Length: 276
Image 1 (tube, rainbow, N blue to C red):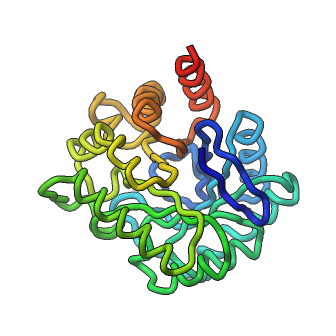
Image 2: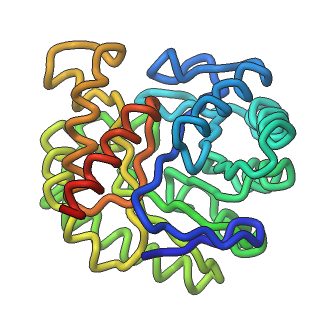
């Protein structure tokens, strides 16, 4: 059982949590997650909280394969007002900022975010880890090969599971030395991995328990699902639920999802199964 200190609130992870995805972007891969008006974002956040999301993840920079980076100012302009509006309507909401920029992270925490979710594990901004330590927020540290623009150009590993395990174990040590107390690990499904790599990682999730940190998985509607099923992201909910269930069986503590209701049902059934 893990705990997270979010702005002075000690949250107990006594069962798997759901992180609901909201993209304040025009170009994230799943169009239904894109919301650019603050009132639309707040409305979707409220729906997700009602359906069982413990965390709302706000991102202003698309990290789909091939995406280009935007300025700190534009990313902040997309995310900070949205975070403020959510907090205005839902004061107890736990919001994470999905960014690899320390400056965007600082602005988001000022606006009301209490978790920093970094796809680069601090590798794209050397100021990130010191900033997180100074902000005293939980930090989600993900593995990625390359950058969003290059990561899907022929990713290769001798052993993807061993590489990810070694990287995350090293990053946790680096985060602790930087002064970060609450660290969540994410193997980075789809970030510099082929479909075969992603299935190998899913199968080897139990090995990541050795790091002794909460484990988050982001599989929702990704190409591993829809390409395997010869369909589209829009038709990948059933496949997403299947892989979420496997992830839960293999030790996932947080599911990062587009569809909160379906994920909550998967968790409820998983918990009933565990208690039987």
